[in-house]
Length: 366
Image (cartoon, rainbow, N blue to C red; front, side):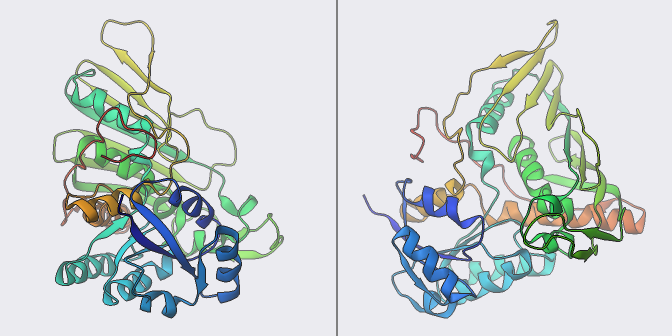
């Protein structure tokens, strides 16, 4: 079976699962990796049995057909642009870019060059959210009316080895975790027409308590508590809370979707599995639903593999640039609405990605 040859740029924390799953999916083969720190790239390459090199060397390698960009958010756009200019398809970790302008430029360049752009998160391709999508489409909760989503935490400085970028422009809970929640909601309910919200920086500085930077103080440059409202083109009204400012616990659900005939409890969109539960009109309790789809374990990288398969077969890929750009615009829209005191009208749109077929193995895509 033909496989697309893939190179990874950025060999930090998240790269390990991409290397691991890159060996499992039927559609792609990781053949090289690069990093701004070439020695780190070579060490990671030796660990996984691929070539290690500089970024420029990887981009010049004619064997590499697609780049997986795992750099920090501030470098997403520049690295993606270089990959596209080098004639390579590119799949990037979320968010697509830091600014809306960069996201739009990326998609325009890809279209001009006849190349594809894909973007994480791909967790919506996991068994949990794919099951949720099937339940909605099969009418288990009737007509969707609304949805709620909650991401609450005390912030990453207690566990992440280098948490500074979470508090820079392009970070914060909205840009770090919002993509998981918004992508899941768009995958279930379709595109967004307008958003509004309120946002604040609750603490001007944060102190790192993880190693190796214990005690370092980080200046906060982006909102860390955002409460938003969003209107979907298909009719439902949603709410979204993202926060790095929750010092205690929380009992809020991750995502609930409300319909005319019941409620759907959707699992954590930062995971691939369940549980999925439904409370239908007339019932007195939740019913847990067996997952209809596989990929319920950590299948991170499935979006890149699905894109590789789509390139090889000519079909559309699911974790695509248009949806990522739409989510990027919505995230900025919450911040804009708070700053300007009014609704933000979305300029972009996207299609709901096609559901995965039933009956696939964990590393099959078609």
